Length: 443
Picture 1 (tube, rainbow, N blue to C red):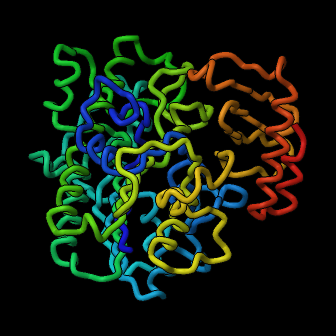
Picture 2 (picture 1 turned 60 degrees about the horizontal axis):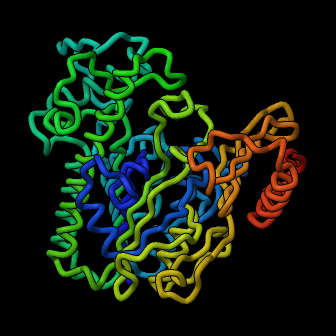
């Protein structure tokens, strides 16, 4: 089985029509959801962008040992495993952090191409460009470094097709036109959008907020909501929604191309993301060190498998490390022993209802006792935010409190203790080093 894996960075699950949103236009992803299996309990695993790609490319929960760091030459990866089995592997990527500065996520691909210029990619230096900040600097994240670099990188744009997502999807479409007859291939398409800076054509924004006259804030400062008025927080939501609609359009073009070249019945197609984005919920904007509430932790995952379920939803747990085993399993390639994720293929074939009974989402585990590092343990009813021995922890009952507003830790201590025991057992199962496991062994 061939596979096309589409990763779009920073997609809020609750902003997609397929997951119940009623005001944002995402018709292409909604259509795709109607053609495959939709996961209602997919969650972030290793957080954030770079660790997530470590999960994806190695089929392993990397957070026990690895954080924001390059892929290692010794890692067994999806591309190297498929390549050894005779598959052609192709990678199109505009997500800068996994390629620039030697981060090495192109490792093992038969071919790859980096679409340059996103965010702080050191791409264009042009002293003749006169760039002004679009708003007060305190409202921007890294206004005089990352934002100005991004502005220089994109100053040449003239049309929608110049946007990163559009160029990345067009590269993938062109590749399919020339390679659709391959008997064994895996195409990975990784776009940074709708990650900020948000810079869609303004007509996308005007769909949602045609009367806005305030400052444009395309790259909001991470942290509390204090720098922003309520109207500006609304503006952030609309600007993010506009960027997401742009992504939906170009992902839709790629999905159309897959069908046009006759691959609907010859390729499994996966769409997912790494995490969401806080837009004022719980008093936070952005990501950074904000807690992993559902706005960040709950992610979309949709899989169209030839001959598999269409328009079906599942409450089976799924996470990024499961993608590599799933792709290999569908391709008939043995799953390496190093993988700690689990194949979702039995779900796609209707053979089982679950492949795991909980999800673990986490920053890189600490090396020192004084470090407070958040891991989130999620099962069907309860969600524990665990910070290490002594806390402070948070416990939420998801059916009655989906917005995670009422911390039940004091009244449901036994539930928290049970979730923590399952968390420690999970860490053992994924071969967490003993010194790091010891630092997570007490509630």
